[in-house]
Each structure stands twice: as C-alpha cells, then as structure tokens.
Length: 212
Image (tube, rainbow, N blue to C red; front, side, top):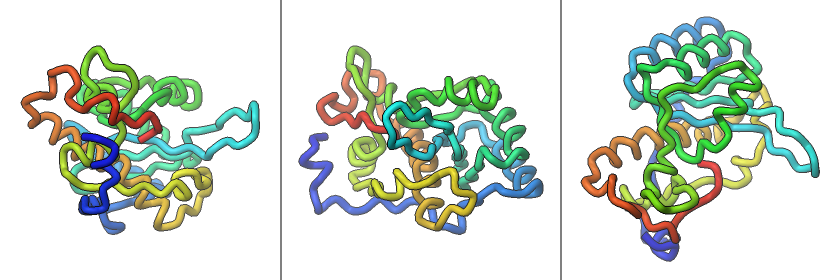
C-alpha cells in the first residue's frame, strides 16, 4: 500500500458511524448505561483526545476525552465529568476486556498520572500491523486503505480543536467516535488476515506516525 494509492482520488470514502450511534456521556444515567454496555463487550475500540498545546514548554493537561466503542455504539467520556472516572477505571483496567486502538503512544502514562488508571489488556494495532523488525507505527488512514480499500478522512482542523470544551460540536463528536470505532473494525479485519503474523504486513514506507 503506497502513499500514492492512499491519496488516490478513486478510493471510496470510508463511511463511519452516524451521530445516532454516538453518546456523549455527561450524566450519571448515561455513565451507568455506558458502563453496562461496555462491560458486556469482550473487545472495544479505544482512543483519546487532548486539547492541543501551542506554546513552547506548555504541558498538556489531557487526555480530555476518552472514546470507547462497541460494534454498535460509541461512548465519548469527557474526563472533566467525575462520574466518568469510575467507568474509565473499570473498563480500562479490566483484564477480561480487550481494548484496541491505533497510535496509543503515551496514553498509558497520562491515564496513570491524571486519573490513577492502569491500562490492562490493550492492543496497539499501529504497532501490531507494522510487523516485527519495523520501526514507527501504522495509522488509521493507511490501515483503512490496506484492509478496506477506502479513504479514512480526518480533518486537521477538528483534530486540533479544543477537546476540553464541555460542549463539543457534531463534527468533533463524529471525529472522536470514528477514531475509536474504526480501530475495532480494523481489529476484526486484522484477525481475518492470514498474513498478520508475517513481518511487514503493511510496508513501513506507508506508515503514519501521527496519532490515530
């Protein structure tokens, strides 16, 4: 999968989740519903978003949003809402629930330092897909092109927006939700790939090194 193919205009656009499949968890009732749905899933998609830093030496206070996806629904959990902390602790530390994502990077350390949560049973597909012996990480755009023959569209403007805002707009909700949901879809595709354990399943020269 070359960069030229990835950028080819003839690739159909990947259609992700719709807004009615997304819940912004901002109440005790929604937190309880999210916990019940996530506890029932053996594997979930996982990602985080943080308000970007622009000043030299500025330290991030993220993550500000954690996204957890089942096949049917995506729950967006603002870290500023205290009721979500128990949901995140139980799900992210659960040894019997596999969390899959791409480009998870330093999520383990920031979740530990900010919320005291220890991640358990996490698979970074960005590392698994690159194959042993390769450096870097495979991102969602390359993986979607490789497995689905489609173009995963990501808006840089939305990606660098204020994720600490308690009132996220619809574009932010869909951007965040699809980051987690596509990871789950790619995981299932990767499991079906007979070459997944071979070095260089996706060539390293097609890698993305950015988050998600």
